[in-house]
Image (tube, rainbow, N blue to C red; front, side, top):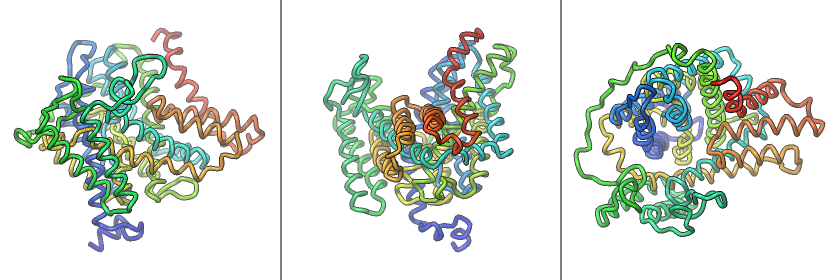
Length: 470
């Protein structure tokens, strides 16, 4: 136990083994939805040849890649950050890439993207970019991710939804009708209030207690009312139905491991392939940077400049997540903002990541059991954690408007555009422009100017694609 303590620096970071174990479990519960959601996204779209990925196969490799990467990160970086298939990139693959490529070719682009990110990390360029970001923007990224997590939780729970109209774009309740009319959303409200009370009263294990209680209530509700899935009838559960029927065990099908191809250029040409890889790298790179910033601040391991222990190793391992995810056909694996749920429960070291990773590996055989926790219950933990992270706005002096505008734009654009990278890009661009115009140009790192210019290309990539005929 002493060796474990020294290796992970548990006592040094003010944590305990029980807190790490509990935090790892909470992070897994908050992330378990990816075992169901990732295969829904990836297996629901045929590629250019008409072939589709199998749901059960994608679910198995999703758990495998998440487990391997989370354990690897926990051992090397020794931080309580968990990995899984990134939702931005898997959606991009399904919606924009496989219409032109086969699934193996699309996953090959993910592998190339990961190799590039690893090289950027190994050469130190990724660390230089990380260091070039001013502390005000790092805090804004933390708060923005908090609001993003909170918004994700509200949407996943059905508490807010699209109205289907131009104004307002979202509203309260199903279809933005202005009222809460579904029982699963009521279960979310119950879980949220219970968890909020426990956390406010500083009850140890409050988030975990809330998640377990909410799941028990959800199972009881489903046993009484038989709501079923929302895809089959209105008012049902989101991604998973909380039932205990059937066997909790399933033999994983890992046939998709290694099913990737690096020969996409022959099908779409080098220019189109470069633009696709550019989009993947930018999204992967800055989503992870923002998440690292937010989680390290929340865990209390970041210094005054926002840097954290073993940053270089963390950046390398995160890039390797894209390689592993692409090679396993699970899509790029990256650090998950839901790790904040475990941090909120007390996790401070990589031991929590080992617990989360082990649970993901076990989930390959226990997919039906992992799916019992409904999205509506897990969403409550996301809202709680989002509120915790948003509180970091208190550390930013907004009296200077040349600081206030980029900070507010960063915080607002993340949830409103549903993208961490978009918020970071808008923040970077507005920071270098407004701060320079205010006479603070000498304080800005030249590297930040380069990154801001890169984001301009990133935001204009659709227009550039149309010009070059991609």
